[in-house]
Image 1 (cartoon, rainbow, N blue to C red):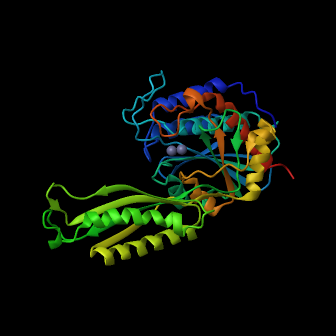
Image 2 (cartoon, rainbow, N blue to C red):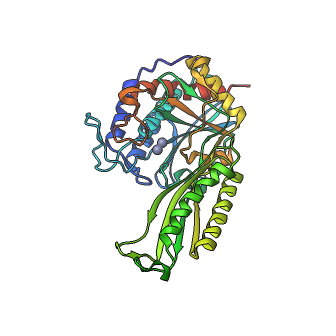
Image 3 (tube, rainbow, N blue to C red):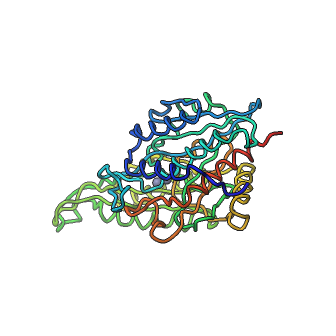
Length: 390
Ligand SMILES: [Zn+2]
Ligand SMILES: [Zn+2]
């Protein structure tokens, strides 16, 4: 398949900018979901609403086979005050589409429209589920959709996702088998000592000295315990303790995040944190309360579905423009929950550099409308490739 000529591309750009101007936070994407449902209905797709509250699923069928795939876009915005001043800048103070989910939504709507309007000329056999999920950023809307029966109500053989990628030029994509985004876990370490006068430290148990040693000791876990070829990060991001110049406080709290790609590496790091904390307790006489909160799992692509994506992207952009061995990202993605239950692939789509290429979650970020046609062509091509008639 080639890059498509899309007669209604201006309308898709207008939808993208309208969604950008009206960003909505996790599980509050009612206006966006209304646009999605209206657009899908207008093209004759059967529309299901209410999964994970604001989630929308559109269904398009052709032929008689029981085969089915899911194409997923995310709809939510971020709690970031927009610093752009263009006409489609956010009209919702404190909230903006700084991750390009406005573009993902518009692009998938465009693909649904193109497929519906050209269904006689596009060779595929089976069902396509267009999945628009809420709350990708931190709140795990993808997982809630699964809990609400996404795969039970819409049985599918594979699921596919896409994210714009600002570090990559326009006209390039990446489709890698295996882990592509990290799993994430946050931790809190609560140190309890014995407060005392700062001039008489021998009368107490100093939590701040213990906390300082603990931060340094934690740095040895990834460097000394995780096998060097495995990717992992342990960052301490908060230290809280003390209020006065002349008081050694009773308590101190450390917080941070762990990123890794495999459950056994995550378990190894958690066990090492417990050992290090036990050592700090013995050495300094403090007590350390430990809590872990595992958030998104790693996003892991299955090899056969990744090959379908690579083949599709290569057909549109040329094989040299499709990267297959990029380094995974240490960021996390809740599409991971869907990939834990179904085979599938999550690809990156170059968003270009320059003024439109500012990094994701930056207050100056904007989704690049130049890539809408590429992403739309990719989704249409993927339907043709994955649901090729037997
Ligand atoms: Zn994001
Ligand atoms: Zn995102």
